[in-house]
Amino acid sequence: MEYRHLGASGLKVSALGFGAGTFGGKGPLFSAWGNTGVEQARRIVDISLEAGVNFFDTADVYSDGASESILGAAIRGRRDRVIVSTKTSLRFGDGPNDVGASRHHLVAAVDNALRRLDTDYIDLLQLHHFDAMTPMEETLSTLDGLVRAGKLRYLGASNFSGWQLMKSLAVADRRGYPRFVANQAYYSLVGRDYEWELMPLGLDQGIGAVVWSPLGWGRLTGRIRRGQPLPEGSRLHDTAGFAPPVDEQRLYRIVDALDIVAEETGKSVPQVALNWLLQRPTVSTVLVGARNEEQLKQNLGAIGWHLEAAQVARLDAASAVTPPYPYYPYWNGQFAERSPAPVAVHPVPQESA
Image (cartoon, rainbow, N blue to C red):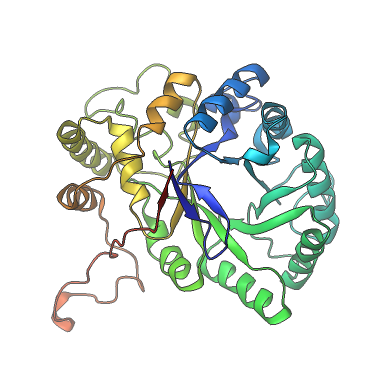
């Protein structure tokens, strides 16, 4: 396994983390992701730990809290070996204060998450969305108090825009509160919007990406093919309406490139797609999920090797899109000496074990 610092913090996380959205199976979205119970979850944690995975991510809204409860039961007796990440601020209840990042909601949400996870502290708490109705000073002062109380160790954001994340960092710096060190973001070969603003921000501010849905909501499993219906059992039958849209022709172009690279490397299509992400700037950990042990073992095969530069270039070209203004700085090439270059890929500092 490779270990990387979580952003500019001193915390080292496994380059592949486990996303526990498959635990619980409650509700229209999460039941399509998976319905792993406690016993199977323990086995999944066993396999993950054996492979060197130390980062496990969940959220209070995943299966109405069941994901946190199952993860807590699955890591019981080995809490010191894992880094637990969870998220809050999305609606979790019917009351007027059961949503957002107010002091009222955050204090209760953290205490409830600690109870479900059966732990005394959360290694990484991330705000699941930006709350425009609560002053950032109130949110960050509350999180500061929870860190001082020993309930939280590191802080992060998820699904923030660039200005929202930067505003949070500015308030933290001005008031002396703990900074966000992680940004849990959607990023994949079919979803490269992260590169336009959030990646440069992460490079500049020391924010590590915790990548969710690295296979594009199941589109990069190798089972989605040109001219063929969605395969039986694909979760896209139930989750496509929740997922960011993807142009079909672009998807097939990416899958074609993945097929070529998979044949060259002797790896599977998902392993190639995951390995591409592992070589991107700012990426601290890529979250993989699994409905069963075999799927988990296959995903873990994405680590321990690297795509060659030509293979990365092939995947970059197949998945490239023109960024919107102002990230694409010219309306045409006559004002520039050359066409704008894609985001440069720099190796992420790694530690192997």
